[in-house]
Image (cartoon, rainbow, N blue to C red; front, top):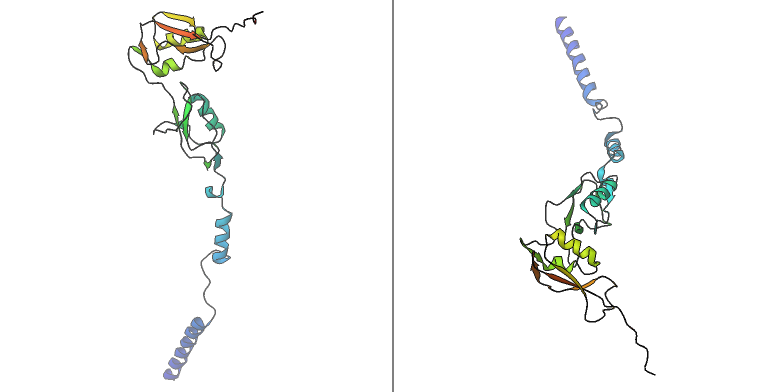
Length: 206
């Protein structure tokens, strides 16, 4: 009797084991939808590479540092302009206190966290002298503006204004066309500014 009962219990346990192993597989612990749903959610999630963080680099050439910083901020960049590494552009227009080179170049599409590097041109300085680049910057100015520019360089020598030897059509009227010294002068040395002479039209001989 006991043997028969033990056999019956053993048979029931065997049936349960077979039912568990041969039935439907256990459910996965992954979210509903499986791998496909996960990929779909990832694709729908916002991603900086999708273009949401893209901005267009503004043209900063010829601007002051303050103007360049304002343009970069208005374009949506996360950082202001930087001058942490040298950037140099060949044949760039060099105007004192103005941006003459930038990286990235204007019009390029970049991420908004990109650092915009600029170079603000500063003419070379020599203590106690007005250098060639500073003298060349006087050409095209009125005599009064040229005097003021020389004073800003620290020049306190005599400044003369005289008409040039001949009229230069490439130079405007009443502006400096040439300087007496093109290589540089001392801060206390005299300097002469030449302006275009007035045109005189002679009547044809009778």
